[in-house]
Length: 114
View 1 (cartoon, rainbow, N blue to C red):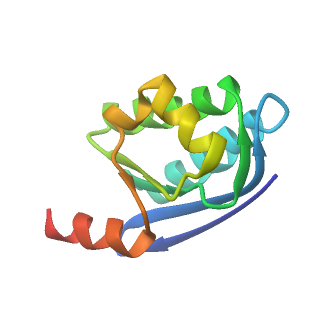
View 2: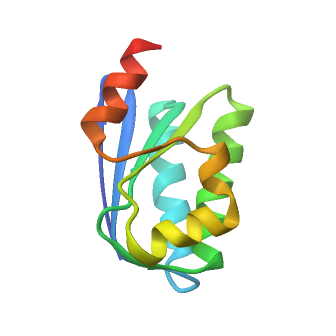
């Protein structure tokens, strides 16, 4: 798995690529947390458009970032899940507690309004 990150308007945007599963969830968590902690960021946007597969370990990694940010008064947003990844989010109910947007632009506009 490869994870690209950048900061835009105080929001960390993470774009994982590949599979988010048992073998990559630990790397995902460490990479994201390292950036969040180093930059004191409390708003995280995870772009799932290039995640081809996600299992319960991937869901746990996302939910863990949600909990971490919630404790800090922050927010997590998900972008462009598709196929089996989108179904997994819906079946787990994560999409009911974490806002899901179709595009990064749409999400950033909404964040700026609030």
